[in-house]
Image (cartoon, rainbow, N blue to C red; front, side, top):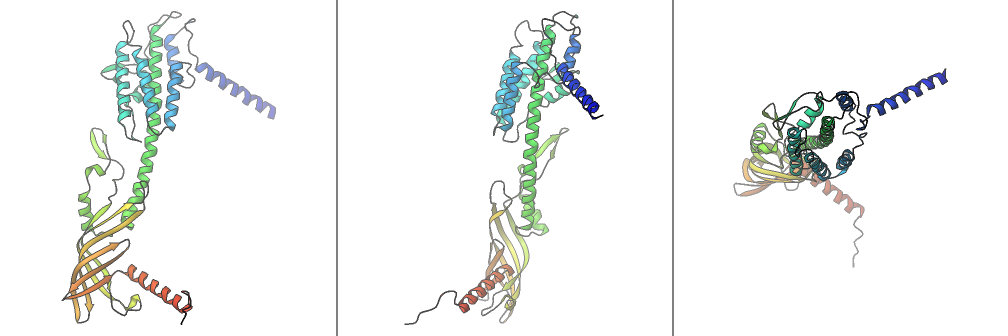
Length: 376
């Protein structure tokens, strides 16, 4: 039973291999096929024309360049491949050629493809969509540079006789399939780049919300108004420009009428609980940062300054003071003046760090961690 199963599997595999080889059977000019149209359709359906099984040296040369383009940091190999096809197409445009208009349209589209790749930024390269339309609809007339092109029409060639139109259409099919392969490569690269960009911007927006200066709705509105249209990617869809993906994350923000809580510094305080609460109102300020690297979502060098009004209960009763409030990372401190007296207000994070450091220093003094003091 097992031997019978193995025999059947072997037969199926052999049949599959023979069928694949037969599917990629290119006609021999010396022995014309009985039906030229059917031969062309078979090469189109099996995607042999312009594929890995195509024996054409031109196809193999272009595929090698496309393969190199998949690993290259730029579009030079793909530009070389397109320019190779431009020369290939030009060879079909001379006097007496059977399809000069169709080849002229393909040549013009190849020129546009090469120009687009030369001008494209990394990760943004693409070729005209008409290559995909031609490849997906080989039996239909597709508009190409003002000319209607049908890759696989019914060929008016007698059975068993030479058919120059077959070879012209075969070469057109090769060019289209090669450019379709290039389009697939570029689309995959763009999707990879777009995914990386989307993930990075999502993380940066989360950092903007969680690690940046907290914003109230009116601050979000004002900072949103500062963003430029170019900060948000767009694309044309059905003749309408629509926003696509996340907008670029700002690297600064305005502080506007921002209320907050702080701690008024008291001389002789031994812990954070000894400090008195204070009400802060940042009237107008500016806060900025930079990203740790081009691909990072970590905020670095966060700093800012604002003009603040601070109300605190001090000796002599509560009073308002006015002065600068400094932001450094996640701590801030303000120096204000009220009734001729200067005061210091800090936030809870700075107070905690100060008293923690002070306690550690005192503990070291108690244990002699700084070394014994020698007396003369």
